[in-house]
Every structure is written in structure tokens, then in C-alpha cells.
Image (cartoon, rainbow, N blue to C red; front, top):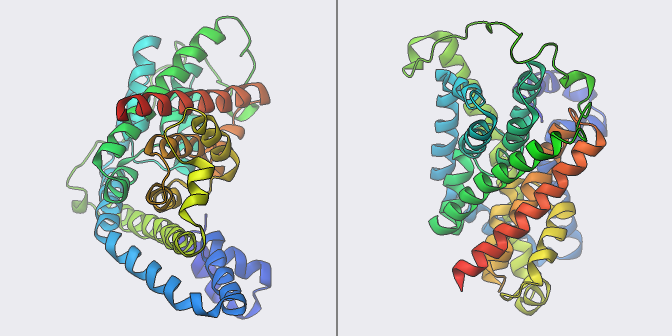
Length: 355
């Protein structure tokens, strides 16, 4: 992910940038947007203006929700309220798993931001089950995702997705707890995540700064808020623009009958297909929102869309890399298995509700 500091340094040496440096500077979404418009200009010039207009209108229609969600997440981080996440892992394992799933679904951390949190928890000796529950639930839903999903797909779909995130986290946590008692998960963490002490022998952790809701009263916290606004806005903005451009091409070139043949209808057969397609085909949680909306408009069942989004959220590159960086292959395999099973069961439950 390109940071603002990277941008500054890139601008200073812009005249000496190689092609690969330009790609890194723009990052994947902007590079893809440029390539798509270049391809349209060469192969379908009549589609350039309609796609640009569609992307522009769709982006600015959701801009108020984007500003609200980014501001909320930045305020939570600047105030120090993100410390509350650590308390989700206190208590007995059964309770800790439920609370970790809830906090994972509601916390304002993106997939990339979860990595240091998870590594710190594991290194401090926190049990694997609640941590893995948090890993599953966190990439599926957060305050930003909730607001943007509700704006695009409706409140009912968003609430179902939130409940599915919590349920998938709990399923993963409790199954991991049972499996860990067999010894199968012994030594399943890479060295970077192995605890240096047990949970009972780590002593009292270093005291964290107090939560200050009126964070603007301190310069450091205000700087954090400003930095997070810029970082999150840049991250979400370019991904959403890319997604809306893809949606414009779907509307232009994918017939409704084709979407219906792929993943349409309310058949139980389409749900496993959605899970299998969601794992390798997924790009980004925010990019999927307008894509799923377009497919639902073309005839796909909302339950199928839910399964696709859930499977893709947990196995998207940032989320998967976060787990792969800490877990050995057998634990990573369980992570993928729980993602698939949870996505399928959630889709079946939503389909039953719709019917």
C-alpha cells in the first residue's frame, strides 16, 4: 500500500522514475484504471466517455458516505479507542472467542492493519482460537464497510453480512479451540508470531495512553487523525473508482442472461459456485460492493452475492497475507477451509431467510 511519505519521495525523484517505479507510485487500482481507459481508447473508443461518466457519477453519489466512514475510523484511531480491541481477548476461551468475533466485525481495522495487532497478541501468549476468530471476522466488516455497503446494497444485506462475519468468526474460533486440543495445531505459528511467554507469565503489559475522545486537544492525536483521513481516503477512493469503472464495463458488455447462467437464481448449486469463484477472483472488499450490486441487478441472488463477498473478503490478498505471514501451511489451510465453510453456511441461511 502506497503511503503519503512514499508519495512525497516519489514526487522528488519523478524525473528519474522507471516504469516499475511509476506503477508502484500509482499502485494497482490507478494503474488498472489507466490501462483500462487506454485499452478502451484503442479497442472501443465509443465506450470511453460512457464509462468515465458512469464512474464519475457513481463515485460522487457515494462520496458523502465515504467521507463519513473515513472520518469515523480516523477518529477512533486518533482517540485511542482502538485499544478496546485488546480487551476482547480477556477472560475464558469460550467468551473470548465470541467477543473477539464481535470486535473483529465491528473494529475499524483494515486487513493490513490487523497484521501487527494479531502478531502482538500471539507474541504475548493470547490463545490461537480467539485470535483466528478475529482474523476471520475483521476483513469481512468494519464501520467503513458497513456504511458503504448499506449505501449500495441496502441495510438488510449489510446487517446479514455483519451477522455472518460474527458467526464465521465464532465458528472458526470454536472449531480451532477443539482442534487445538488434539495437538494438531501445535507449533503451527511462524517464529515471528510465537509467544515469548505464556499468557499467565507475561506479567503486566506496558500501560497504554488513555483514551481521549476529544482527540483534537492534543497535537499528536490531531496529526494521527489527519494522517488517517488522508491514508484511508486515498486507499478507499482509488479502489472505489476502479470498482465503478469495472461496473460500467459489466453494464455495457455482460448480458443479463449470462450473469443469470453463471450465478443467477436461488438454487443451492449456485452457492458453492459463488464460494469457489470468490476465493480466487476477489480483488478488494470495497471493490466488490459495486460489483455485487451490478450482478444482483443482472439477476444474481443476494444470497449468492453474500457467499461470494464473504469468501472473497477472508481470502483477499491483504487478509490472506496477514495470516500467511504468521501461520504455517496447516494453520493457513484451516483458515481457508473455515472461510469456505462459513461463507457457504451463511449463504444457505440467507437463502432460507429470503425464501
